[in-house]
Image (cartoon, rainbow, N blue to C red; front, side, top):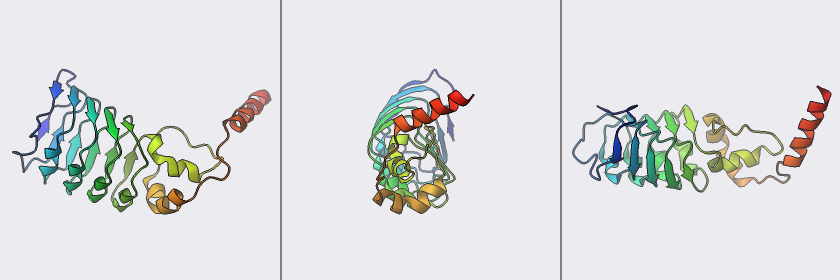
Length: 186
């Protein structure tokens, strides 16, 4: 177990060989610090890792594809960082994952369809921009901009959502006129 969370005093970068010499490590928590730079690809060598929590830091670069080798991982939290690139489809191989929090990063692209294989996932937090198919499926219905969607909704309907476009996209003018009508009634 390595618990370094909620210090706020720990800064610098993660060792580039982190994971290479710790094959039995089960818990790695370094959230709420000032750690910056990239996540080392060697994290994928932590075969018994169950928890990886690096949220609320200054991590940048992309998520290494090697994290997909963490088949025992149950919790992955990398929220509130500056991670970029796409969400790696390899994360869909982490079949024991129950919580995935990637919210408040600078990812690009859509949510990978491989994530539908995460049948044990209970909590999912990703930036709204990655859930374009979810937003497009529900045309003219307001979906809260909170980044928290039902994983069951995403998993069961993902194929259909990704392939169906909204013929009448959500109109902000229509929504604002509805709000002004409601305000006038009060």
